[in-house]
Image 1 (cartoon, helix red, strand yellow):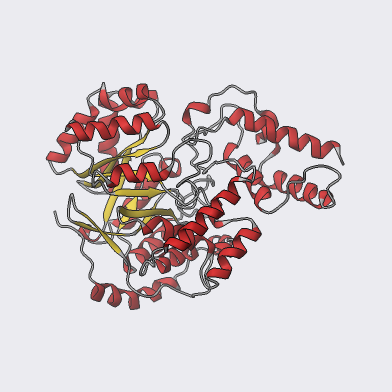
Image 2: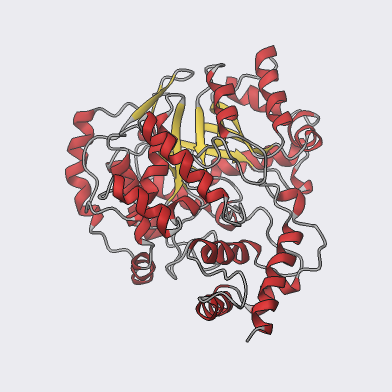
Length: 464
């Protein structure tokens, strides 16, 4: 198996051809949705230019693009994201995005059996199989969350199905998906059933080239897995962590400082893959006064680019994942990393100050991962939190009826709430069953937040 080495010359050659794809015919609905993307995720530059930055995986010799494509928000025929939209995936649009990414140096594609309601691997396999197999790296996961998939037999079936859907006979990067909720969960999914040993055997056979895990949750589980590495009971070729300037020193809700997660990997020389560089999109949609500070420093750069630059600044980062639904996001992120301009020490300190300001806002640390879904009572938990957070960031949360801006904020919140979340799926229908609690990587007390939001909504209605 050949490692993927893309030279500057071949990249610049492909860059010229890529401009044709940039003008490709995405479906009309996708174009409409793209036009509505926040300006904070746009830069003034019309298209990517320059040469993609690559990082070397010393375990396998892979030269990996610092920008990785997260295939969890693929476009749909209705113009939305398959993470939120139940309509059919727009395979033609996926193909165009993948083509453009490859032509501009992106070579790491991350998927999972559970992404896009179980259809991400298939769409990814269709798009990538049109290109030479040694021109890209596939990362997928053993997502055996459900009790029905945790046996050795069912977990093995999931891995084999991933290979079929991805149209490949080997996976470049295989992750134990979302470990960390508890030691009991880790043991049941990967240790007591012998799956970790089986995956290591598949690596020896060449069916897995790099084996790692993605971490959410209890730092004690994280430490245990790294101790396994230290003792030689497992060899982690890479580890996927949540890493952004907000979580570096001041994580919200889950107690995980990404500084600690990253440093523990760096001292073991284990490459890190970054997830949530934008913290579920919140670092691309900042409060206006914070956004203005960043725009003053680099007026031609998008607000999102600051988060991506920070994520890639640390040398132990192998690649930074971004779930890119629209061409505008893909182009902006390629521009940020072609090449990467690392954050200076002064810029990092400014971002940490921004994070402190953000922590003063009563937002909910939801990243819209959808692991809490489906709710047995039909609530759209991620959309409820997303609307609330948007109103916080845009100043549409009024402290009281005496607030001089109360009428406008009240109207914006209530009208937007009904537009964003159907009434039968709103917070008022939460019964506090707690089914969602063990599945939340951010350890949000979801029922308590539902009560808080519903209480606020009712107060707005009463003050009509």
